[in-house]
Amino acid sequence: MQIINTILYIVVIGYLVYLAGSWLYYFVKAKQLKGGISGEEFESTMRKAQIVDLREKNTFDAKHILGARNLPYTQLKYKEDELRPDLPVYLYEDRKSVSIRAAVKLSKKGFTNVKWLDERFSDWEGKTKKTNKL
Image 1 (tube, rainbow, N blue to C red):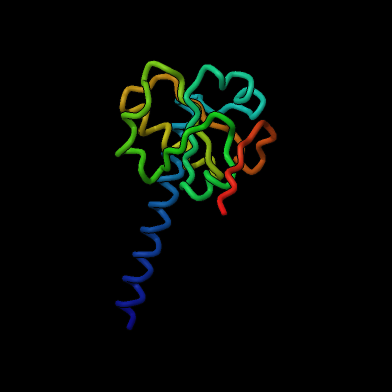
Image 2: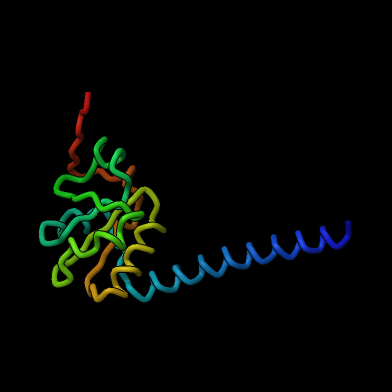
């Protein structure tokens, strides 16, 4: 019984170390990319950028930033070629961590100007579009 408890303890500690390491990695990468921008800056400069909503299609259809395209994070590696690397890319999601992860992926693919909304989409006060599907 003590061996099982020891193994379980090691697994739990290993998982916690993995979570902390993952968080630290993306925290450092976000600082390096310097891509977090406020809602005001996002809105005032987004006309020159490709706006990407990283949420799933059903939440995008319910409400999204006017002019955004839906490219769910879960599909990003399959559809990243829909984006132009020579134009700025503005990302947003309900969780900033998802936007940072997407920005890291895009920067590894050669995108040099990737920004993300430094707040959650639910806090967005700019123009939105709602799709009412009956």
